[in-house]
Image (cartoon, rainbow, N blue to C red):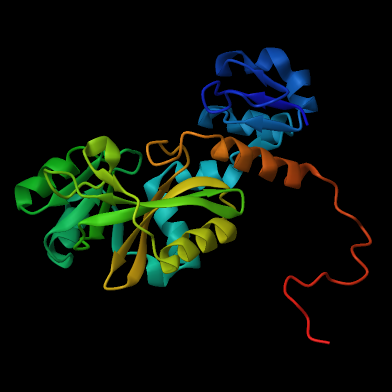
Length: 272
């Protein structure tokens, strides 16, 4: 299995891997065409690689497309699991829409920029002045109900399985659970109702490398967002992530038996 990577740090130690600089990728078109997988390209490379050079990319195209914009991500969540998506209003940024959202949402509420990560571009809106300042910074209005939380869970999905899950407790200044904004990691067990939801969303949306942020309110899980390029603060220091990625790529690369097995192999003991 020959790999081409555009991210030396995320693929450090990967065997049989050629590392390229993103801005030089068109100098290596034949190498890219012949690679089994192209790993961690920049978002702006995606069309040329997938549609132009017919490359197989990891993370998946869906991981890139859906994870690139919170508006599109939320709509994808609403399409496949609306019962687990917080109530959200998305509108063009005009005076009528500003007033409608302000009058409709319960206060306080959360406002987000469509493209931001690590807790940036997210505000708790408590006053009309908060709302005005947010509206002055965005072209699209994204308002979401405020969930009373002191923590959420980061659930890392690689391939078709949950690699790890941990809690992120609230920062000292409140509101933010992101580790980058002062949140702290808690390794207490994360309920399966949360990990099951992350895995369901990943499978239904075709997302194969993501850190899902899921909240639990009175025992019921709500999906907040996912990050295609998640941080490694909550991951172990071993090679588990590398092994999970390589194992998944090998599984997806292996040719399928066209005839299939003659009889299914049971996964549990069969009574005789």
